[in-house]
Length: 320
Image 1: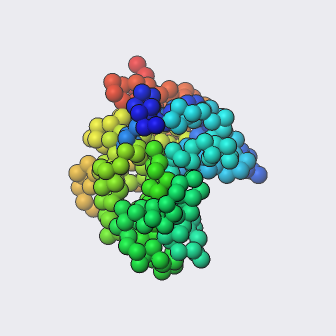
Image 2: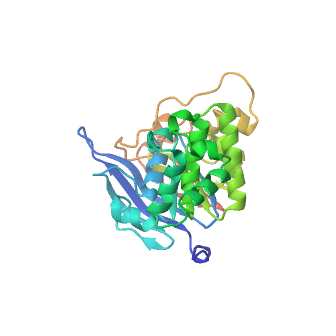
Image 3: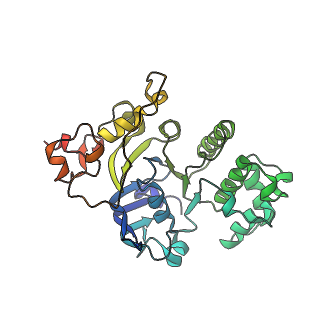
């Protein structure tokens, strides 16, 4: 049923905590994540490596590693999951959620023709049509019959990413999660995949959650932007507003590293000293040690996520 998501969010995440058990001590990768996405929404997740973007995407898709501890709730099409991982959640959401990864080759069977791999996705979801549906999905992503008869090792990186997208589309998802889908490709292939994805979004009624560390990609492809740092959401709002007038010091510094996004000068790019550490114990702001705008209170007071008109920001600079 396609009309239900219009009455309620397609995706609702509430109070999500994700902890990875480690021999040297547990690492809480996500803390208190609240997030929603409407049908046909175009939402982006921005942040450095280690900020929790992929963990959030995997939690929504139900593919977190075995043993991961999850609390909070995730609802897709208003259906709750007792935990956002494991076979029960995958059975509940596999018809609604599809995911495309940064590097597609590990998820393709090296000894099976790619058309058969797309057809296998259809069969696993109880769809009929087999090779016919597979061929249609491959054509939608710009691949011909010759490519369908090929094995993954015979294809370029860009072609393999198109196969992965064909598999996702064959599942007829309500939500497509794309985790850094172009970062492993050369510049030409990146442009082709982004153009393809933009075209598919125009013709298909699915929502998009796009994970990236590249603001330029998110500016082009999304209308809402969530900025993550060390397992928390630190800023959220309309994509172009966040790009043009970032509220959080972390967002400002991150965008300054991509001068082409905000029209900055050419030359040597700035860097943010240090790295995000979601596992570090802190009673204050997780960005305080790297923040040039920190206040005395930032090291001892954890900031809440504050509403600022149509925006949200987690920073004591706005806690007036």
